[in-house]
Image (cartoon, rainbow, N blue to C red):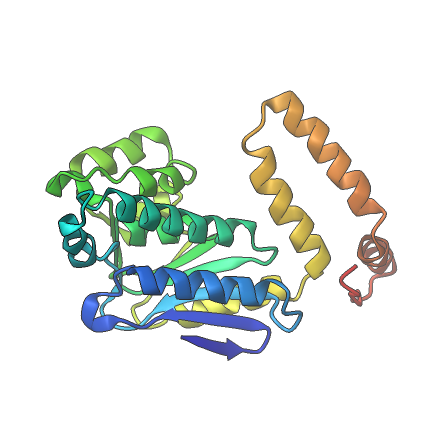
Length: 258
C-alpha cells in the first residue's frame, strides 16, 4: 500500500501474515507503484517499509511449488517470476528519485535483495539479513546480484554459501545498511533521511543517482570520462548556477528542479 509523508512516498509491504513474501502479485504492485511515482513531481523520495514482524521472507515458495504441476514442470513460470522480480529491483535502481529501505525485521533471500536494491537503508536493531536459499537447495542467485553490489565479495559469499543470518550491526559494518535504529523508530528515521534528500534539487539528485550506478559498472578511465561529461552538463543546469551562487552569497538556494 502507498502512504505519504510530505514529499516522501511510503510503499508499505502489507502481507504480514505471509511474512511479506514477494508473491507474483506483490512484485507487480511494487513495480506499478514505482512506475507511478517516476513522473509524479509531488514525490521527491521513496521509503519502502513493511508491516508485521518480517520485512520480507523472499519469494512465495508455496506459489512457486504449486507450478511444478505445469506441463513443463514450472520452468516457464519460474523464468517469468524471476525476471519480473529482477525488473522490479531494476526499477528501484533506475528510479530518478532516492529510495530508502526501512527494515524492521528479517529480510531474507529476495527480501534481502530488495534492501540491497535500495539506494539507502535504515534497519532496526532487531533486523536480520540472510540469503538462505542454499539451505533448501535453491541458491540465491538473483539476490546475489544486488548483494554483491553492496558488500565485499568475501562477506557476500559467506552469506550465500552458509545461509546464516547477519545482525543489523553486522549489515551496517558490511555496507548493506546505512543506519541502525532503535526498534520501532526505523521507519521514522528512514522518512527523515528521505526528506533530507528530498530538500535537494530533484534535477541534481536524478543526474547523480543515474551517474552513480552507470559509472560503477565502468573501468576507471571510462568512469572518469563519463563523470566529467556528466559534471559538465550538470554545470549548465539552472540549479547548479543557483546553488553555487547561493553558496557564494551565503543564502539558501531556491531550486527550480532544472
